[in-house]
Amino acid sequence: MQVSRTHLAIAIGSASLLVIVFFGYLYWLNNQPPVLSRSAERDPLTQMPISITMNPLRDRTIERTANSFISEMRDGDCRSGKGIIARSAPTFFALPRPNTR
Image (cartoon, rainbow, N blue to C red):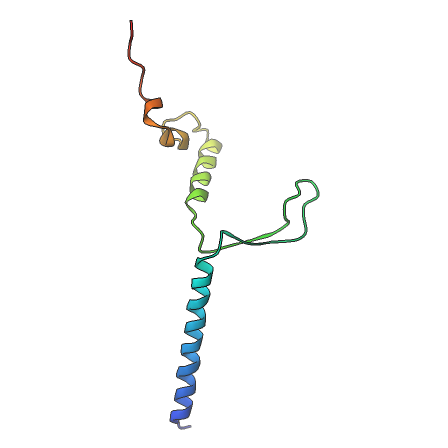
């Protein structure tokens, strides 16, 4: 089967249209909030939505911080100096008081 210029133009045009639509979708998704949608159905006890759809391009630093904090609590490292609260505490709380006597 021979490939004519018309077939080649149709293939290149459809491929470029597909790429433009894909990057347009990524651009739209990048400008959306972390929660894309919530279900109308609610849990009767907590009144929270049954399911939510999260943005795959959201900033996940808060989630990573919370996961490491929960892992440290589960492992019993609550009072160690490497905890999240110890890292995020201001320096004036961490310094000892001067002896005023």
